[in-house]
Length: 346
Image (cartoon, rainbow, N blue to C red):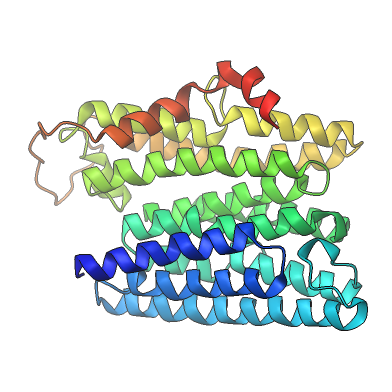
């Protein structure tokens, strides 16, 4: 892709995100979402592979439908209340439509079907953008309207997302699809707490973004997209693979890594809200995700393939590791001791 075109699309992504997260008016928020959608589509389809073209078409159709529902929801609310302010969403039908629209944009169950397919058709860097930066504007709208949304509906969608993200990730061999289902599962954790502590949802999203960025950038460095190539990438970059294992365990939510912090706080908050059954169910469902994270961690650090593969042994890579990967890895495995300071900010 032409560097100038890439720069324009990246700046458009930043502009769209900034417009949405800083707006109070529904029309401006919708405009930001549309700029984001139109800017990411060329980045998805830049390889011109049939699968990439298919992914960009699927993404466009789903996002266009979700944007239409956002517009429809805001117009219904404005018609009944005379308010275009995002925080003044009070009409029940408008609230239901907005929940549907944001669930489609985020890839929450039952509107998750597009997400693994689009990630599989994208490059690893575009998949990283789709998993993190593209989810920030919809989560911001959820944050601003959280007081108006239906608690039963959100809790049901959250538990279903955690369950499906765990179940569907078990039998995958493509790493991008595994990380897509991991994203759906994490979104379930964020959604379940948004009514009771919206700031905790944002903190969970930030930490999830750091851990996911670490994993995607590491995989991009080793050029790993499926399990069979992951098994033999140890010879290429031994230290990077060792830190990838730690980042994956952090993403699974195991102590003493960073990923344990948001899950611990969410379980604590749900218990305070007398939602112990919900906390128990969502914690049990995270064990499904733990299985495939452990599988990935095992594959990333295995030194000899357990069976014969058709891949050539890769040469050891002496290139220095990217500084951004080093910083992100440090953050994704070592923030738990700083939890008092993090808690003071939310």
